[in-house]
Length: 277
Ligand SMILES: Nc1ncnc2c1ncn2[C@@H]1O[C@H](COP(=O)(O)OP(=O)(O)OP(=O)(O)O)[C@@H](O)[C@H]1O
Ligand SMILES: [Mg+2]
Image 1: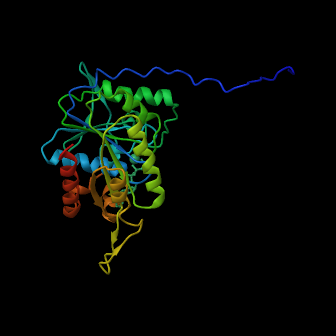
Image 2: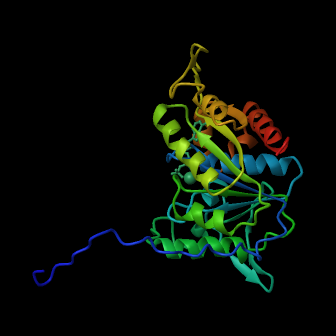
């Protein structure tokens, strides 16, 4: 063998990584809902925030874990982007919002909005673990976890740490082929990790033209319902493409607090989610 080369007859065996223990510190939460998608930008954060506000308006104690360490958006969407965290003898206190929802996010720890979090997986894992274990979530009816797109470290960390009794995953899709293809991977991820699939939401589903009143299927329509049917997952509902959602989100206002029709849609989704799950 020439000097300096490495010869390998067969591939090395895969490393044996012991499964992490289920967390014993994340407790006192009645329901945890993991909001996932395959594709980015389909509206997970917008959905998580508006669902949380809707559940809170129905009399529940609700928290959000912004599990998107690199792109934390939830504080801004809830109008608390400038807040900082504080801790007491019980742990880190999530930031309270005027919508009755508490939130924890990497955004609260950054010096300003433009600072990037450039962390490898191990550090993101640690941050998520702290969000679960060191934050005071006791007595919450619902904790909603807003994930980055795909099936990466953050989702894996949570799937491995949360107790088995924790509820499961809501898949957000937009109806175009590419988003649906990626959603199948998120479904496969949940199945592989034995997480319960709570339902599918079709977001940006049709746009009502303000001029002619006709519905325009910008990203097509019905794909979310189809993916739910094929995979035998509950279809939770359809949210249209509404320009007001963008305007409100950019202003830090959950759109359900401003738009009656949207509020009703979210209430329907929340009821479907609660029913039989
Ligand atoms: N139903 C809707 N109608 C109109 N705009 C929407 C709707 N849902 C989400 N949006 C807008 O789409 C954009 C992307 O939404 P959002 O950030 O919630 O997606 P995401 O899936 O969380 O993205 P990422 O994968 O980057 O985390 C935002 O500008 C948001 O205001
Ligand atoms: Mg997001």
